[in-house]
Length: 318
Length: 301
Image 1: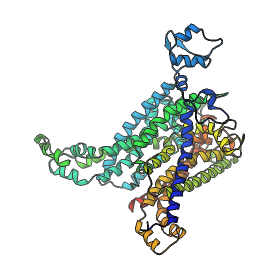
Image 2: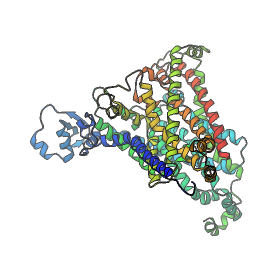
Image 3: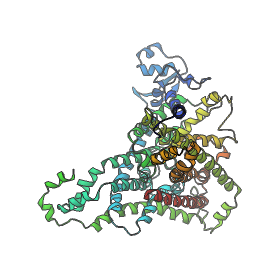
Image 4: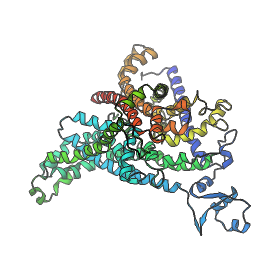
């Protein structure tokens, strides 16, 4: 700003920074509430007044991963002594862990989490793989009606999921792809492909053409130049695009709700379905939510310099 | 880096002519993607366009009949559908306006240097990266009339945000504002940082007031990017399904996407839902068109 800062400007600056800090606290409060509820004793999750500070415990996570039933009578002291620490926590809550023989029965959560992981990883690899090739094509070659084709590609991203899901549901039913990993992967690839093409095109446009031209002059074929020169240069862009595609697939709800119900169900439709009737156990739901949101939070930090590009499909680069 | 890789090249590959022609490579790189999108996005839409002229119901075995434009006629004269559109319009206006104000406001506050600015900006961006369905579910606890922290902090007693027909839609909009203001903030920050400093310096020399500087320098230069944020958020808010669906079952918060979902997968009125899907689709494509137009405009600058 101006060379000499007046005292009122300094004061204004301080007020603005204080306001930013307050706003940050407000924005983070719901996230803190999810994270803290995941470590709360059951009764503190729904206490009045709400509990902000407490002694954290991991029991909600034990409940999240195990199948349990309410106990009719008190636990046999010998069995209690013999139980590992985490099982004692379940006994303390008046429940017991279900077992088949000696094996602890797991809840559905790990399965659903794995489904999310499988579908998100495979669909990301495919979408980014295809998108990278296509982006290179659009970036380097003359294509008749290029702008229209790119608009067509982007418009597929904008289709409301429920609109696409109706015919896809009917078609999947005919070929038996309902409630399958493949079915969901295809939908997520289709959804992420346009994004990947647009974002990768931005990254490709930034790699100087001269690099490949030099390689071509030296006798590389176009394919060799692409694999040996362009791809290594585009590595950061590919990584950023992949993380974005992963997060989108990981978070997706509508397709997963409609296309899966048991075998291939992912975490986003599963977590809300735990609410059921009666008083929900918010600590267990929070534990599941916490584990589900954690990878996204970590990725957000890794992506922080590419977020702007990502949310504008590569159009705005800073 | 390129020159290093170029030196040791197998002469045999040089002899292998120039490999595929550029034309072949271009087609090989682009056509699979186009085919994939046509098969899995466009073909289904053609398929559902066909069904939109029938009384097909996916949960019944009986043969369907061709009914012409009847589905469209019924939908467009159905008060229920119109009320869904009105609810959606209200939702779009409230939540997008909220996001624009909060997001741009945050960006104005953040547009100065202070310690840990990068960390704070990233923390503020967290909400928009998270799953709307899962986060929306959790807002049920925050809004809870009996033990929710929101009512406690605001001293609202047992006000039932999500089960009160008058407030349910706005409660969802508030959550949406929380999630997506960071998006507007991110775009605005980029716009603000691109304003040349010398304009502000010139204004300071001329002793221009804060308001004058803001309306004559800041706003005009940031407005193209704000417009992009506005159109994009409008389009997304219009399509909103997950957050509202997991947060409330109030009919007063039944957005058009939720209506469509119920018609297709709960009432199994497949033919009619295909017709409704087309009405929604045409509206979304109109906004998309506008969005891409402005996106390209900003890109050229």
